[in-house]
Image (tube, helix red, strand yellow):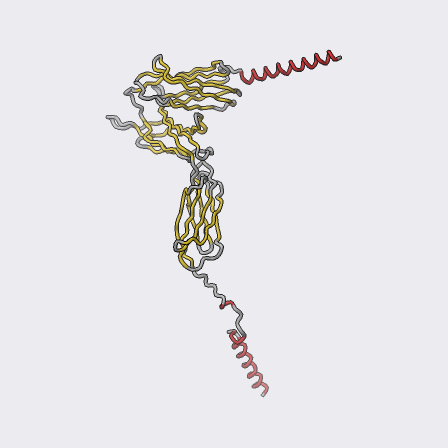
Length: 371
């Protein structure tokens, strides 16, 4: 009986271990059809690579190499802890080459899981070639709310020609793209300003990078692509858009201007002749881009007639003043008179003489009638 029990227990343990091995193998084993590189771009400055997985995978690596002829100039490695089904992952890197030589470059990306190579892609480009793209990025300015770009066509001896381009905006955290969107068929005839707002929440005082890729479709040759990345630090931001004030209190409407949640304070300060009379600090509602809320306060007591200074400060998450509005309050006399509301004596009541006259007239009338 004991022997049979031991055998049963041993069999159960073997079965569980075998099941765990099969599960692990199923989770980790992948073929070229399960995950692949779907997009690759590189220039002398930077590169980005996008992969797509059909299954759930872990421990993925992408080895990036920049080569000039047979010489490997740079090697970088991306480590991806997890890839979810049907979710694309885009990684971005900078080559950081000092004084690169003119020539024909090759970028190679090798995708592997658990040491097994699953996909390899190449991107070729030339540096120092006299050939110029038909459009270029004239300026790019990112901030905590979005990114602004100016595109321009290249001028030639024949003038400028309209160019249709696809503009892709990327928000990069570290080496990973966390937001991307594309404006298709943008008509660039002259300097053309464009902008895109971020739609993801950002972390205060965290560094991000905005990456803009311009693709000019071509039917006769490979599409021309250029890209540029600019770093920025995300910070909270808000502005006062409307203010109301009088002798009894004030209200301020504050608009959020950042994808960093604003959680600061609104400070109302009333002063006269440089002396602070009252200060009220109110916690601001949480604000992000295009959110606006109104904060109302009431003074401890009605301000006497006179002119007062009012300062309204928007204090940010870190205690810094991100906006300030200074104005005056013209306090008027309330017209409230205590003596006017005191009880008057019967002798002073305006209606007393009226009643007396009415009684006198009635008495005279009755007297004459009695005669």
